[in-house]
Length: 458
Image 1 (cartoon, rainbow, N blue to C red):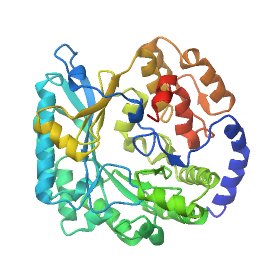
Image 2 (cartoon, one colour; image 1 turned 180 degrees about the vertical axis):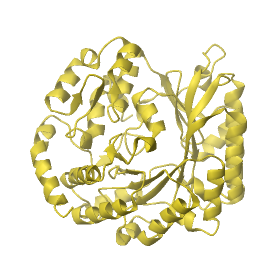
Image 3 (cartoon, rainbow, N blue to C red; image 1 turned 45 degrees about the vertical axis):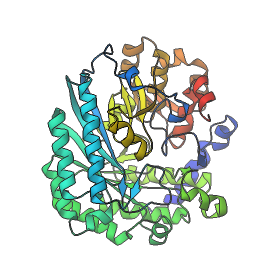
Image 4 (cartoon, helix red, strand yellow; image 1 turned 120 degrees about the vertical axis):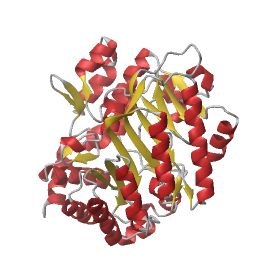
């Protein structure tokens, strides 16, 4: 791997990035118009109108049949990281966390009272945040008891929980991991971000690299086989050499999967202020693309496959099923808790973004739905392309669902991205090309409707 940087620079030169810049496809430094770090849903929150819960769950609305994914947002953390744009609360009392769980239970009861979920099964469950492992052993047990009593969960369901090194290293950390295993959690996602201790301090992480590695080893010893580790390219003070060292250290750990989502700077985060004052400390756009190429080449050598984009997976059995379903199959998702976003019966909707508004709505026995819209047929097509290109879209699925091919519906956009070499296809699948993957969000936005574009900055 000694020539990884040199090889990646040679690949970068062959990709002809200036050609993309001229065509208006260029990575954004600062993310303004999206709800989270990257495009994870369509339409985005900032383009959605306010909506009443009764419009989605009216007596006349159809039942939700078959399998769905479930996401639960637990907004509790041991600290606020410099880059974090998610809804999170720091060092809350156990009593307040219990109150939040009470409210989640009421939200579930309100949803089930609608009668729309009587015939559904959960094929995947994801507990995110925040940091779910901030909760106590008893609270974690309570969450799974609640979900198991209210929903039918498939026996082979993928069940993921996010964890952080400092919570695993806490005195009750092992016990929490054992509770997760006892409750059939079969996938653990851990945020390392980098192995550089100086950068970890800048980011306000609450551990060092040795502790992160030890936390990973503890999780392995307790019995977790499928562990995902997050790394972030594009961090302040992160050079290509620092990034290569990060890759080499993760390679030695050989986790089941690694995510390498580039840093996204949101105006609501503390890192935005640092970026405004000391922009020179951040890798430039070219270097961030180079970091993506380095990761691609590095993990390819180790036998990992890249699916979805920025996601490197050792074996097919470890692939992140919930994400693939949501992105490539128009999979339905029911989100619980503050700031969760759902896709049910062709409605894309969000819960309230503040804990106070979320609690207030539930206390009034009202579903905490904030903004949303029912997608038309053409916007369902756009959604599948916006999200699905990142993981690959089945041609058969698209045609069976819509009766048309993407290139026949979106002729101008398709011609543009095809001529730039950003997409590729075979007889079965359409996906982003090697050249297109570092610009997945920017390519996705090419499929936004004009109305959505107009409403992005309202």
